[in-house]
Length: 244
Image 1 (cartoon, rainbow, N blue to C red):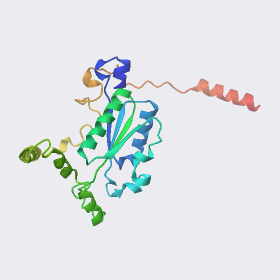
Image 2 (image 1 turned 30 degrees about the vertical axis):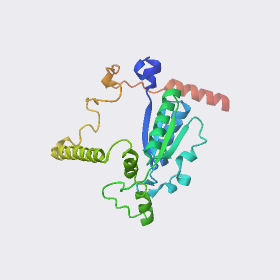
Image 3 (image 1 turned 90 degrees about the horizontal axis):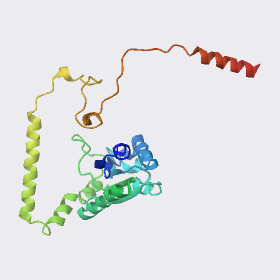
Image 4 (image 1 turned 180 degrees about the vertical axis):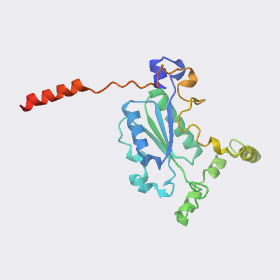
């Protein structure tokens, strides 16, 4: 993105930004810290969106981040603007998101947006969340953003009937997608090992190839350079002269 804007002079990337989506579990990984270091030292227009639900799979965030609040821990991190708040409140979440996006777009600097939300279901379908106490589960459901969203929209912005119709339409779309997925044929076993290594077929999106870039000519013919004997003799001669 920066290469397109600054080196190639592409006008279409002047206000583009990078967005990283993660959670309170991912901030305990080395990839997060590497990305954070690169973005802040290079002053890149990168937005780190960290959705904090208090759990990384089955481990509470307090065991992965001191104090359980990555935004507070990074408050003194030079070159990083912090935006944090209640992700279950529609108005506050929308305002924080708009502010974070505007900052990165206009200032061309990195920022972190950390909305706090409950995790109402398990990490995956087989996760029954037995590691949570009944009190934790009850407290999380009390923060259900769905109820807050309805209270925010009805009746100020839409009617009760309009809300019901939106729910029905969303359910219909979800059912249609599920049915389409279930109708897809089972993958053929002989294709499982395809593209483990590059087979000449490029991706349809992402990278430079879809934009017409061509790699320079290369060859698979080995051209060994031989031993670096000259350097070795010089090294030996230098060592002997200094030790002599």
